[in-house]
Image (cartoon, rainbow, N blue to C red; front, side, top):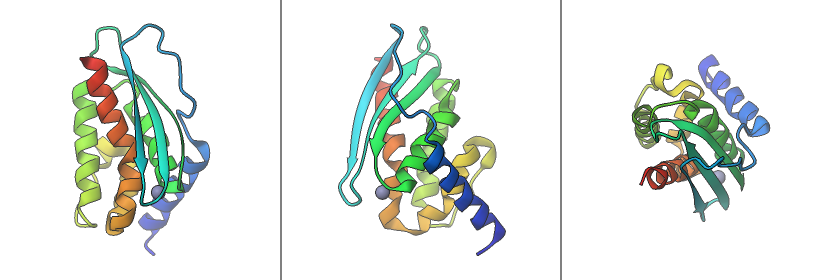
Length: 150
Ligand code: ZN
């Protein structure tokens, strides 16, 4: 295993324990939406809430509650950390990059400047069965953000 691989594994392990963003937060009357996603192949489940700024330009907060494997929980934690304060444009770009990375089967080098700790999931793309685990919360956030804007 390369040192980068082990660094990435450590990041995933840390986030699966920290679970940043766990516990749904108040909406404070701001535009927000909830989304539920379930991954039947692994049993991962997540309820995720996106709260936007009042002008609907920025992600103010992402919170969630869920249960599942360490990859799915770590991914939700990383997402909550990374998405906070992003403009919706930046957020959509980050989600798209993450999706491409995970679909790449290990062929794409992650752009750490955009993905931050989410780059740690690059190795997951080599395991097709686990891609859904990592994508689950990101799909939920994408859907919720869309709904909150409308
Ligand atoms: Zn899973």
